[in-house]
Amino acid sequence: MLTSKEIMQIEIDRKTLRILEEKTIHENKVFPIKLTDKELILAMVDPSDIKIMMKIKSMLRKMVTPVAISEEEFFLLTTKYFGIGSGMFTNTDKVVTFTKEFDISDNEENAEIIKFVNKLLLDAYKRGATDIHIEPIKNDILLRYRIDGMLHNVPVPPSIKNVYAAVVSRIKIMSDLDIAEKRLPQDGRIGIKIGKENQELRVSVIPTVNGESIVIRILANQQNEMNLEYLGMREDVLKEFRKLVHKPNGIILVTGPTGSGKSTTLFSAIKELNDGQKKIITIEDPVEYKMDGVSQIQVKSEIGFSFAEGLRAVLRHDPDIIMVGEIRDKETAEIAIRSSLTGHLVFATLHTNDAISSITRLIDMGIEPYLITSSLIGVLAQRLVRRICPYCKTEKVLDNGEVYWHGEGCEYCFHTGYKGRTSIHELYLINDQTKKDILNEKSNFEIRENLLKNGWVDLKKDGEEKVKQGITTIEEIYRVAW
Image (tube, rainbow, N blue to C red; front, side, top):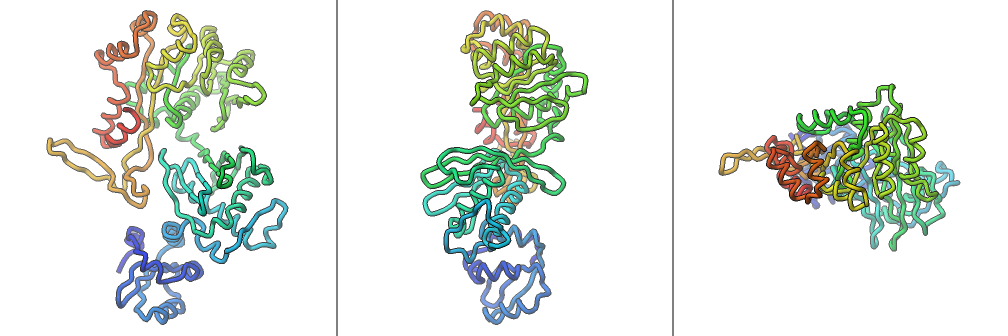
């Protein structure tokens, strides 16, 4: 007899799925697993329910063999094969709307919409999604989760298109947005509680030709994960970066594209310094992770409150440590440099492909090389790479004897072979030699070649080392660092 664990690993064919109506499956919490000429293996939340077994046996004229599954396993099966919210809108063949003033107790469909949105948020959270994308396309709704930096399609029942306007309205109400405004983009936030955890969601709604599209960013509470030891740095990089973090003044830059984990690295450094004896102020756009003991400022460009304006104000507030969400222009860069030269430790991010390119970027902004060498103390470049899934991790020995690790793909990792992420890094220290290179205006290529000759480890080399350790794959390193 099959176990519930084996059931979750079986790929159920369409013929078996169609043997029972979706309504029957949901009402009785049963699920057809395997169909033969003589037998139906039936997963049941309540395998002692003889009545439904006899009913199905009579209807199919086959033996029914029950296998016990949990409520959670039933939910996973129905979600996998019928989509999020399956069973909720089986009788909906008309378009449903949702108004803020409507009493949901008077309308079963509105109550179902609330349940659907709640189930959607919970499912995305449990799967480790960072973003939920809900997009109307021609005659359908596309639902995707971003997990470990990659988008994955999530099935939804076909009837969801008839209640989509109501779903959008429900999310708008939760985000305190205007449900009547469908022509302009809107941004909001939702505070929810999952178990004992308080979670914050950032909501963006934009109008498209097919209707309103929604992206929900799950701002997971990462206070416990914000620790320099958890970032995947090599021991030598961690040691040197920690030295920089504990210096009394200077600028430390963290570089990389959007979604490379720069904010997590900066906040991990801030958390280490946040001992109650220093005044720490951050200027962010937007404020994503709230930290006790730190004064966090939200940039508001619509009223002229930019990073530069924020920095000017912060300097009058007697700070010891300043974090600037991003250096975007010459003005912000100049104020950051001035701050570091007057005894402040400044953390900031730049959008560059590697650590050395940050020098070129600052010079392109109009910053003189001598100001860079007198204020900048180090640049950390990083990328996020997916970890090999521990549940389906497999060893393969190549012809040359090298061991290659990869994930076969399983239920736990969306059949991708990856689960979770780690970082690869390169740390560019501003010392006497690198100062000479900058002042002599050497090219990025020349600086890189000199560093590599002296044993410097760049992003690619760090990635290759993590491949050898069986943490990630060479395909991941090619994806982010080549």
